[in-house]
Amino acid sequence: MAWVTGIGLLIVAYLLGATPTGYLVARAVKGIDIREYGSGNTGATNVFRVVGKGPGLAVFAIDLVKGWLAVTGVGWGITLLVGDSVGAMAHAWWVTLAGLLAIVGHSRSIWLNWTGGKSAATGLGVLLAMSWPAGLGAAGIFAIVLAASRIVSLGSMIAAVGAVVLMVVTGQPIPYVLLTIAGSVYVILRHRSNIQRLLAGTEPRVGSRPAAPPSP
Image 1 (cartoon, one colour):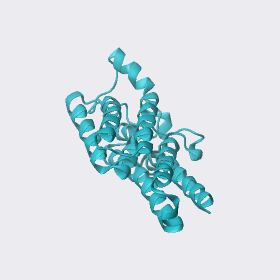
Image 2 (tube, one colour; image 1 turned 180 degrees about the vertical axis):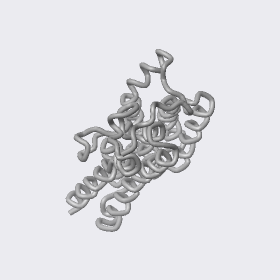
Image 3 (spheres, helix red, strand yellow; image 1 turned 45 degrees about the horizontal axis):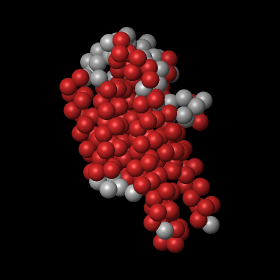
Image 4 (cartoon, helix red, strand yellow; image 1 turned 60 degrees about the horizontal axis):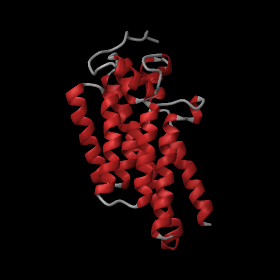
């Protein structure tokens, strides 16, 4: 019963992560496929640059909540349906798998032919659900790097690495630390094109926007 319940909850966690927030918002506001503009992904940064500040912030907030809900939902579901019999370590592993699937779902959405965003906002939501001090610390690192460089991708990658250190320093369970390491590597790999532009000095900064897409 525990396995059946857990697998069902993990599927829900993936579907939460796979909900294409940026795509839906861009469709609703501008009538466009956001994948055809800017960086070509559905994340909050691309929506911010192409569609506008308000829609971009809305996408960021919703994507963050997706990650948080995936982790807390599975944690609560396992506790309510199975109880303490599952064990603390097994519970941590179920939560960890939920976070991983939410992160992968955001960037590999079943609804968008396995495309999506770069999982930074959803990953932050997952981190906040597992350890809010580490999550807030990673958000602070992102804010500092962004303020200094005005480059969102750079802030996201440095915050991802900082999150690993914060999870270790705050003494989180091994499954949570391993997920943070895997998630950080995944986020950085999803930023490969950004890394190339950073090295070439062509990565866009906050305040620079591409040509506006046509009205619907």
